Amino acid sequence: MTKFRTFLIGIFILFFHFNASAHREVKFVQEFGGKGEQHGQIAETMFMTFDREGGIYITDTDNFRIQKLDPNGLFQFEIKGTASGQFRFINPTDIAVGIDGTIYVMDWVIVPIEGTSDPKIFNYGPCVHRFDSEGKFVASYPIQDFSRRIKLLEAAAPGIDAEGNYALIIPQGDTERSFLLTVDEQGNIYVFDDGKIYKLDENGQPVTTYAVSQPKAGQVIQAGDMTVDRQGNLFIVDKKAHRVLKYSAEGKFTQSFGEYGDKAGQFISPFLIIALDDGTLLIADKAKYKKDYVSGLPRRRYDPLQSERFLGVVDDNLTQAFQLGVLPYRVFRTRFRRVQRFYASGEYAEKILIRFERENEQHLHLNLKAIDYSGNLYFINSETLKFKKFALTSALTSSAFQTEFKLRYTFDIEDVEIDNQDDLDADFFNKADFDERLIQNAVDAKVTFSYDVNENLRGSMSNTLSYARLTDKSFYRARDFEDFRGVFNQDDESIQTFWEDRVQLGVNLIRNHNPYRYQEAGAFVYFVVTRNDFINKALDSRNFRVFDFRARISDWGAGLRYDLGRAFRLQFQVVHFFGYNIFTYIDETNILYATGFQEADFTSAILRIDGVF
Image (cartoon, rainbow, N blue to C red; front, side, top):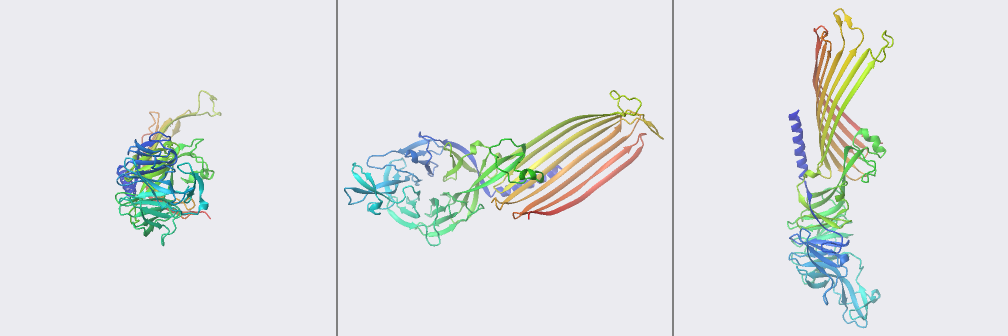
């Protein structure tokens, strides 16, 4: 049994290691930030980026400032307010940091139109503010030439200029629209605005402008984020088309990769992208994976985290409970989020999984906000506005194991008294014709280890030990039994000792997470060793009757299930049973009356298809 158990566990570990090597996971590093106006605190509307050393830069839009934090989240400096004749934050949003530490932030600027007076006319349009690595203002770069009139005067709104005189202001486009900003290693600035890319050099001079809806590229419905790699290639994630667009440094469309789905290399509304120094891309999307672990604990009467109907199936005995929407056991739920790594060519490399437990209050309200150049992930709590930083780690994490231990001890005493009302003693209370006392001690222990290797694969290993000892003493008040051999008292005692050791390994694979097309497959293997010893002997010293029975039984089994679409499931199981029992019977006169030996060795296999029509 020990060798077989070791073999099963070894196969189990190798299988999981092989499957886990296809991805990485994260570990919690630290927490920082929070809601407020003090140093290191932020308001609800904010944008985030990093430098190559891990420094954190945050545009705190509602507080009209930029903060720089060190890699540990400690405040370093801020850019806030206005400087006479320099710049003024109007609605700062997206932020980028150059390789030399230069800070760029998207905002709006008011530019006077040349040759206008009484009243003066101003263009109100998007710009990029530039600051040096210490936060000192350098310049503001409008992404277009706003010194001339672009729109008709009918679009103007009344205003007051710096001298307090009446003026007209012409807004350039929807003033509530969003922008994307990034910068390459040469200091070139890229701005995504309303379906166009504006590329400026490090001094804010226009380099090129191109539309992302070029031939073969398709229309970008909703750009979520963009980044530039060391070769100057620009990558844009399209949230609505579930893909990534790649453009050369000259603005030429080169390729598109990705499609809708939650499998490797596919996307569901990608919203973050960053080009790392090693040339790979990290891309986050909104794919979510639900994994439920059904424990043996009784379900709490009021459970806010498990109020909805549970739609899984664990075993046939729970079918009715599932149909009624009432699961008697407590469910522990894990939710997976993912970030995928790609090469610059668009080839899929690996995935990074992030586990969140529904029962852990620390994991509630977390949303991925940013990724730095080392691959660290920054989640923000939408309630407290605190950041949680997670670093990459190995695929197998000990904290993700689900361990369940059950221990039950049973002690039972049962007395039986039977009186024959037709006999002569007629004593119903003090002297029975038959007395019996049964004493049972039983111990059951089970330990189960479960682990979600990834968003698709779960494995489990359990070991169950059962032990029971039953003592049964019987006293007969009737006249002693008599036959041709003599007269014998039949009071006797039976002792039965039973123990069983069961080891089981199982895997469950979700083939399709879509709730309308949900499919899974699973397999298990187990091995059981059973020992059963029974002895019955007379209590009277003149009666030598003994019956001794011993059974040594083992069995192993394996099975698999496979969903054939939504309505059919294929199931196959094979069981091999083997063992023997031996008994000896010595009669009342101490003569060997009978011996026996039985051996069993058979195999059964079952194949079935269950379906719903």
